[in-house]
Amino acid sequence: MQVLSSVHAFQNQCLDLRCSGRVTALVPTMGYFHEGHLSLMRWARENADTVLVSLFVNPAQFGPAEDLDRYPRDLERDQDLARESGVDILFTPQADEVYSPNHDTWVDVPGLSTYLCGQSRPHFFRGVCTVVCKLLNMALPHTAVFGQKDWQQMVVITRMARDLNLPVQIVGRPIVREEDGLAMSSRNAYLSDQERRQAAHIYAGLQYIQDWVRDGETGTAKLKSRLEDYYARNIPSGRIDYVHFVHPWELTPVDRIDSQVLAAVAVHVGSARLIDNMLIQG
Ligand code: PAF
Image 1: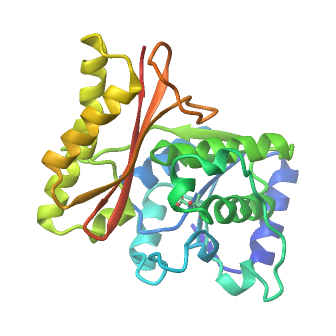
Image 2: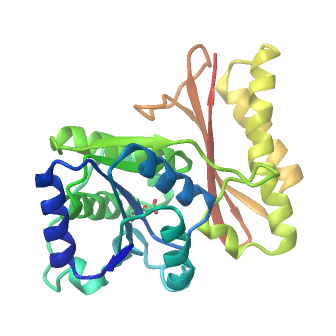
């Protein structure tokens, strides 16, 4: 596995790869790898000739009061895990090379970005879209692979790629969960033991929705309040950011579950803001 930090060297090598006809897949990450990241790398390994992974904690997607400084980092361990997962090139650029001092160009998908996480993190998707667009321009991959835990991110990036005619296929891969159901996330590292136990209820609550729907409750206002009650009872260290029922690709609110609907939640547990989601069948 090669480790490159120079944007220029990475881009030149990726350009050669694309011209040589090899099929390349990019897995964009912010590092501190867990099974979720590794599953994306393994999928890329099985579906492309060359696997590229970027590891960059993108300052542009953090708000001033957010966790940029304490975001978990462990480059040595990440390198080992990437190597074991069959990655060919690990790209670890520096922030001042990705964003030059007079950087002044932003990519925004303003409609989709206002829903769900966009309400409490108004800066977030502009930062994500800008860095992903830059990474796609550097890596020129045939495919870029994202985890579905960040469902809205996957939807926003898919729309960006379509609207800008980027020559890349965006692939979303299923959420990888801990044994008790908690969605894997680098931010789980912030949880105390007690918070960690409570955080498992985020997914347990989502699972109840399908039962409630099966029992005949299809109004989303009722489902939302039942889920909020469940969280209040089972996650006492938690504070709900949102519980929403939306169209999976438009992200617009839906009143009734009569087709496939995305249940999406964000809950602060201790100092971690955790998100999760589930497709509910009508
Ligand atoms: O999902 C992430 O880790 C980040 O938002 C991404 C896509 C790597 C962009 O910085």
